[in-house]
Length: 298
Image (cartoon, rainbow, N blue to C red; front, side, top):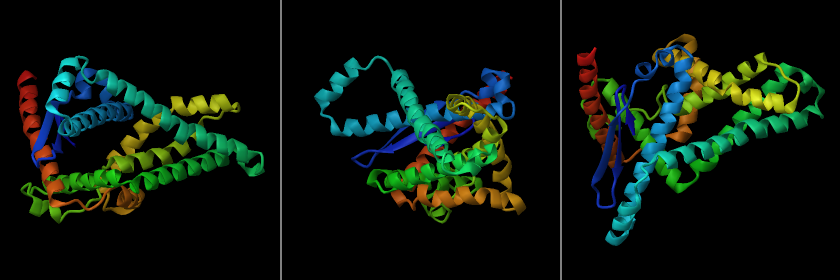
């Protein structure tokens, strides 16, 4: 899946070797509501929009794969019964994913830290408490990434992830979008979503330390309520550091995220690079059309 300011496109390789493409315009957040373009606020808004687009592309790719496995009769029955679009599946997927994330990366680390506090008096200190909680959260995150990386299907997803980065690097370098050019590029990119998630983990330690509560339920609820602020601050930090990632302190800031991408990206095959190139070309073409329409309407 490739995203541009005004559009996105997803390309899926079918069983017969052909490539199915879906592309749609993306509404600019500032056009929906001016405050959504404000610093920090825009970060959480972009996160929600990205989650929705990600789930929509997964839904599309799943349907393409399933269509290769279904008979013609099954396809006809499915087309007749499919009237509700993909809104409800996306909504339910977001709720389920959110619940799992809250349990795994907020509730569980908080519960373990609270339990450890009874054995280690130093954790009674609020800053130390949040530091321990944050370290446990990062360990959970790393364990989760390492666990899923061992799955064959996820490894293939990580190869496509690497293909996306290589193709984006090719376009950023102003080179022709070819497999030969993309093959030479790195799979590690400073603006990757993996890096963003790691930023969130680290920023949350500082933010949670500012707001002090005593009751377990109050601490838990504060962590949930503060997610938009943490996401917004993390977005601004990665937005600031990514263009300067080769200089001074910013190079140090992006290094952990790039290191984590050695797990979440793998070297792609040429046919995977081809799919990524098709997706980016489609997104860029539609982006150009929508950008011209926006300029004409201004």
